[in-house]
Image (cartoon, rainbow, N blue to C red; front, side, top):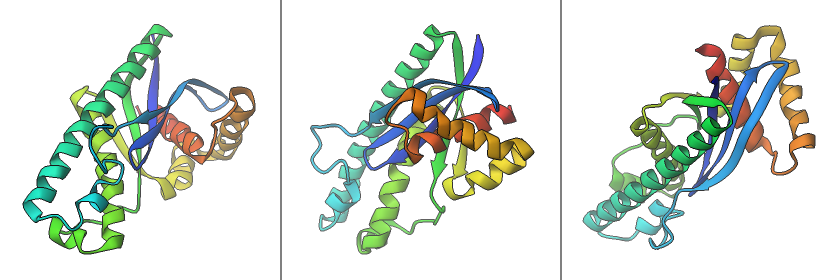
Length: 198
């Protein structure tokens, strides 16, 4: 079994996932998926902090906890399925990279709900944490990489191979077809970084 890794680019309510194996000059995109991690039965779950604004604090806490439970469960189901499918292709996936934002720390919930910019920040962190907790429950090794730091980290890990690797990843779009946006490219690179560091 060949080792592979998952790169995850979270969004509000979903994530772009790429399973990648190999190394610079010989990368293999094993799988790529969009995994939705919001329960259709929970109103406002795609933007839970927006929906919680205006609620009593206790109601907002209960609502966010229900959303978190559902999102973590759905993320776990999606990850489990993608790992099993990769195993069927001769790949063992035990690690993942989650792309992070700038990493601003969040204040207590009342202050978040009183600030529209903080609501957006909290929602981004909410869905990143859903993937992280789901991966932890599956016993995966998890690496967080700030998305804006990807080129720098790739340079540190791959050295002179970093630039050719970026071009190699970009060219994959012509053979794979859409979607192959910055979401998939960055998730692919993040997965390769995890593989290289093991």
